[in-house]
Amino acid sequence: MLNKEQLAETIRGCRRSDRYAQNRLYSAFYAWGSIVCQRYTGNAEEARECLQDGFFKVFTKIDKYTGDLPFEAWLKRVLINTCIDRYRARLHETHTVALEEAHNETIVAEILIDADTEHLLFLVRQLPPAYQATFNLFAVEGYEYQEIADMLGVSIGSVKSNLSKARVRLKEMIARRQKEEAYARQ
Amino acid sequence: MQDNDFDKLFSHKFGQLPGEPYGEEHWSELSRRMDDHQRRRRPWLLLVLLPLLGLLAGGNVFWWHQWREATRHTQTSNSQTTKIKTDTVIHRTVVYRYDTIYQHSTLLVQQQVAEVPIAIPATTTAEVPVSGSSATANRVPGGQQPPFDSAQRHTPAGMNAQENALPTVAEAIPEHTVENSTLPDTTAQPIPSRPTAPLTADTLLKDLIQNQPLPTKKTRPPVLYFARPRLGIGATLGLPQSSEGFIWGASLCTDIEVARNLRLGAEIGYQQGSLKSEEMDALKKLEIEIPEPGSNFYLKHWEAGSVPAFTYALHLRYEIPLRGKWTPWIGLGVQAATNLPFDVEYEFENETTNLEFHASVQTESDTHWQGALFRLGAGRRLNTRLLWSAEGYLIQNFDEKPGLLDNQFGLKTCLFYTF
Image 1 (cartoon, rainbow over the protein chains, first blue to last red):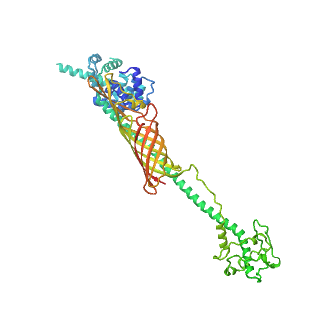
Image 2 (cartoon, chains in turn red, orange; image 1 turned 180 degrees about the vertical axis):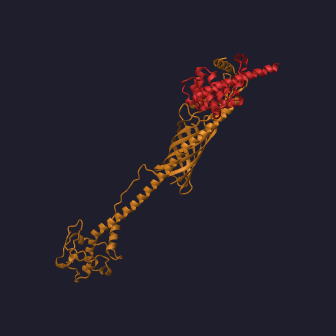
Image 3 (cartoon, rainbow over the protein chains, first blue to last red; image 1 turned 30 degrees about the vertical axis):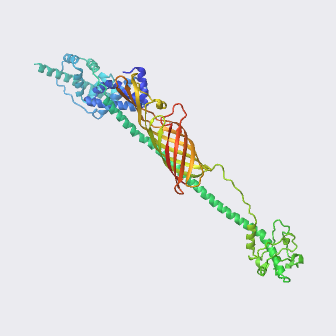
């Protein structure tokens, strides 16, 4: 990662379309940006494409970065918006979640604590795009309902509904996975 | 399990996600995409510059049209003025000389016909204005002609009978009156002899006009003027002094004669250079970031495959007047350039490990004076309109940090159309 002075110098270089500075910024934030994009996409390939699109936007729109907020926050916002734009057409799709059975919340919590990160990422990627984006924005990024509604272009009610359904779907998948593992052990 | 806890567990777990490692191939892909993006933006630059070129050419044509109209108008005015002057001269001369001639004619007739009186209508009482003469209004009272004395009788040499057979005064000019014979000045003057030509008023008038020196006003051409504009297209092949490589270009050139053998010209051109060097000095003016891969690395070379620039030149050209189709000339001027963004590829090498490091930096667009322009060439006239010119040129920037294309020399050729 770059320190504050290096980052400022690199951003100045990017404003001049200095390819060397762009390369330095790209290499510094590539891994970090890939984590962000992974959460909002369906697979690793899509995540990479979103990341490339996001950096392309960063380099072409860097003049819009005013410095009011930390660069990492601005970059994350650009990357998230890029991912959301990719699925924007599908964000308004409605999904029905069949509440099959009541989950044992304690068991779910235990599984969650012991779960592999890659597995959790896999579960989140199984969610419909609207649920996935809403859950990530609220639970992981910490955005408010109103901000999420603005970013996704939906109402606050839809945000709350999607968030609730995303949690239910995740818990359901976790419980199902626990059952499958128990069955496999027997 | 509360939703908050559920969310926090996910957030915590996602914080441990391993990021995808940086890969050079990903950067190459994005870099190519950026290049494409910038190439697509360049046509906008052309869209801006092409109208400027059009304006330049259009302005030249418009100026030429105006100049031609003005020339035509001046010629028409001159011819009209000549006519008016001729008329004026004729008119003035007729009134003044006619009567004088007429007076002399009368004298001749009087001598030849001796005692035969000239039939003068009694009604001819018109005044004869004679400018510069005291006899302004002489009337013949009662239509009688006073007898001529011997002093008034003289025959001009060469006056033959045919001349003597001139019509009577009254027939010739009935409106005019024969002047009084006592006029002292005009009658005493010898009549210019014209033995072969019939002595008529017209021939005498011509004779007088020819003999009389017409006032001629000597005019000197102005020191500075605008004439004979030319518009042409040119091609350039140059060599930079600060790096290896070559420069080629095309240009639109125009000039106009502002003084004798002196032409003021302007030129707008597009240049493209392919440059390479092992020294960083040539890049000082660009103020681009130079990569620093480490102390063990040294610069093998830098290379710029495509260095585009627009150039604008203003110059004076003195044409040495020689007989023949070739006209040598020398020129002096100044030139400015707008360097468009281009990529500079650096190649470093580690002295110990021989590991190579490549980096690419893009420059920014800038406009600056390139320096003084020295030209030496010759032009050959192909026909009345077309002229081909070839020259050698030198652009020298006397600044401490000259630009990449500033110091260069080369050859240039141009085909002019003279309006």
